[in-house]
Structure formats: structure tokens, C-alpha cells
Length: 258
Length: 323
Image 1 (cartoon, rainbow over the protein chains, first blue to last red):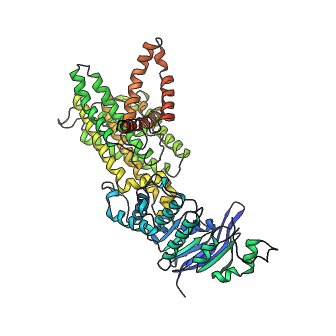
Image 2 (tube, rainbow over the protein chains, first blue to last red; image 1 turned 90 degrees about the horizontal axis):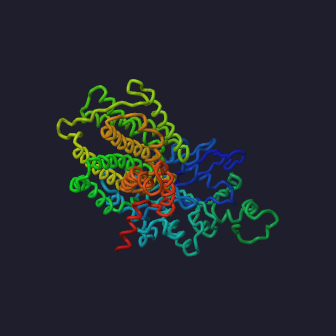
Image 3 (cartoon, rainbow over the protein chains, first blue to last red; image 1 turned 60 degrees about the horizontal axis):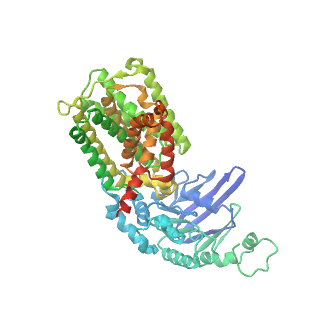
């Protein structure tokens, strides 16, 4: 069995009276693509936010490489090798695509209290950034301001920025949200290429993509994990079908997203 | 992303360098040299504000406090008969740096409207501290002797003073230009654009913003030290909250997010402040000039509505149209 890279223990987070994540314990193995699916409002994004550190859990713990990171601030986690992409595209709009990725490289290249030499001339930032952009398929668009990129390209840039921090683990919050069919396929290819070199926690509504990519799938419903298994087993799990399709629709043959 | 058009900066600085010469050629009174000297000093303050406002997205509504602290540093040294500028100016940098650090440490825990209010509150505290300092003239202020630089620079000579201020403005413009394009500058602009993203990338954004806040306060402090010299007088009025408002107007008028824009904004604002009342008296009716703000206000609104990048972007467009 592969090593456990990330682990949560009885993670709980509520907003007022709404329990978003309830005593969730899950494990992510090194090198796997671990998909998290669930109906809207199941707590998927809340989970990612807690793993990346932008939200603190009410109780429970998070371990990364056997180190308790529950109280670590977000920027410290990313230096440990946890990178996150956002469900709602979150790039620096007035920066060029290359600037965006170079800044992500810069984030892990020591401190930035350097006031004199020009950041845009620094080859140790620009070259790795160009490599990532090429890998992700944006090499034609490096000098375009992020705000002028298409939605799909911005999603690619979002992933490129996360990759450029050279993470051990990527937390991807719906990388294909709002993408067209072709763009989605391209993204699936990119993610498939990352398999083996990176560990991925993937939240996605596109079930074709999830079942094509994932090694294991955790199903979240009302903040609780109702199943964690391989894709074929998840597909045939009656509880998962019930959660997704509601009762009285057992006849449905294929697993479909709402 | 600095929107500075360098030709505007070069042309503007060249013009500022020529002004005293033009004034002598046309045999105009020395008053004009002194007026433009004051403009450059406040332009320096406006530029320092834009470093955190236009590039860092921090709306400080208490920036005049550093003008005040810089002025009082020179004033208090002068009071105790220490007139050496080589002591006064470094001391201004240190003292303004400490004040900016303390104010920034607390203010930067908030954002948005709260940040605006808390920077204003700190500025008001220092303003009333100034009023309570009876020994240094309290409300009425006190006279200041001009700094001495061991005979190297004579600030009592209007021309020397002018080029002294010009050199400092040029130096700090260049310094800020380098800062904006450095790694630090990229982080600062990233924080303005999307701070949550910067944190997710791994930047401890608070520290970088605080550093920018301190640099800005120190530069503004230098402007304050120069202002006390220019005025030969210091009083709490220099850090009245309306002065902080003026600085914001200068930045917005000239072009937020550029370094030279605030300089242009200051020139326009202070020239209007000087001449608009006269023009209104002459063109409308005697006494109309008292209500010059009534013209200034709508002018500002028009500029914000129709030229969002301020004068700087208007000039930039001019160049494009002419090829």
C-alpha cells in the first residue's frame, strides 16, 4: 500500500447552524488521483478550503506527510507542497499569463523582499513559468493579459499557477467548471499526465472526467463521507445512487450527474 | 502592472528642471520658483501615497500624518538648535518608519472601509497630539530654521532649495520605479489584484503590505521634512485630515497606479487652488473666488467620470492619437 500523504481526522466545520463538514475522516495516498464528488452543498469546497488553509476547522485535525498542519496558515502550507486551484477562476486579471505563473514560481523561490532587480527579467522565474505554460498548452498566449483570456484558458492558467509552485499535492476545485467539451478533454489529458508525478484531490461535477481519471472516489453527502472506493465500486454502490438520484429511481441504468 | 508612460515622466521632469530658468529668462518674481518648489514637495507626498494606494490597493485616509511627523521632526530638532540636515533627514526616515510600522501593523489587520477609517483615526490621534504639545506651540505651531548641510546646500537660496527638492523627487521616483518592477513590487501589485490568490500561492501578504506601508510613510516623511523647511514653520494644520483628502485627490486626479500621475495631479490641483479663485473673481463677480471649491468639485467629478486614469491617461491617449 502506498504511503498516506494527506489525512483528516474527524474534521468538522459549521457556518452558523449549517454543518458543512461533519466529522470527516479521509486519507489520500501518495500518487493517486482522489476525486471527491457529491451533490451541491455537500461541503466539497469547504473541504478544499480547510485542506489549503483558507478556512480553519471547528474541530478535528489535518495531517500532511504525518505532520499536523491544522493550525498552519495558508502560505506556510503551500511552501510544504500543497497547492490549490479555485472553483471560481482566481487569477491576477491585469497581469499577463506569464506574469501570473512567474509570480507562482516566485512564491516558492525564497522571500520576495528584493527591491531592486527587475522581476520580469529574472530568468529563474520566467523560464520555469514558460515551461509550465507549455505543458498546460498556453505557450501561444503567454503575453496576453489574463483578463483577455477565454474562460477555458483562464481555467488552464489557474491550474498552471498551482503547478508552478511545484507542489506535492494539488487540490483542484472543479478545474473543468464552465468549460466546453473540447477544453474539458484537453484538461483531462493534462490531469492524466500529472498522474504519477503528483497527488491530486479533485472535485469535479463532470462524471465522465471523474470516472476516467480517479483512482479512488470519496462521496460526500451533507458533509459526511458515505463511500470511499474505486470507481467501479462507487458506480454500483446503492447508497451513492440513492444520494444522487433520490429514492424510487432505482431503475436508472447509468450513473448520471444532476 | 505599472501603467507609467516613461515619456511623460521624462517630459514632466525636464519641464520641472527648466522652470526656474524660464522664470529668470522672463524676469518673473522668485515667488514662482518657490511655488513650484512647494508643488514638488507635495507631489512627493502624493507619489508616496500612490505607492500603497495605486500599486498596493491600500486606501490610506491618513497619509498627511507622515507629512506632519516629518515636519515636526525637523521642527523639534530646530527648536533644540540642531539644524544639521544630515541628522534631521535620517532621523525623519527613522521616526516616520517607526510610526508607519506601528500604524500599519494595526491598520493592515483590517481592509476596505475599516482600513480607511482606522488610518484616519490614527492620523487624528497624532493631529491632536500635535495640538497638545504646548511646548512646541500647540495649536499655533512654531517657527522652524532651515536645515543646514555643512555649507554644501544653502536652502535659504530659492534656486538651491528648488533643485535640492528636484533632485530628491527624481531620486525617489527612480527608486520607486525600481521597487514597482522588482519581485517585491510584483507581490505588492498581486496583493492589490487578488490577495486571496496570493496567499494561496504561498505569499505571507501581510508582511509585504506592511513593508510597502512603511516605505510609503518614510518617503512621505521626507516630503514633510522638506515642507517644514519650505514653510519655515510647522503647525498641526499640516496633518489635518483635509490634507489627507487633498493627497487622495491629487493621486486620483493625476492617475492612480502610476508614479508620475500623482506629480501631475499635484501640479494641477495646487495651480487651480492658487489661480481658480482669481479667475473666478475676474470672470464672474468679485468675491466669487471664495467658492472655488464649487468649481473644483464638479471638475473632479468630470475627470473621474470621463478620464478614469486621470491626467496621465489623457496624456497617454494624446500620444497614441498623434502617432
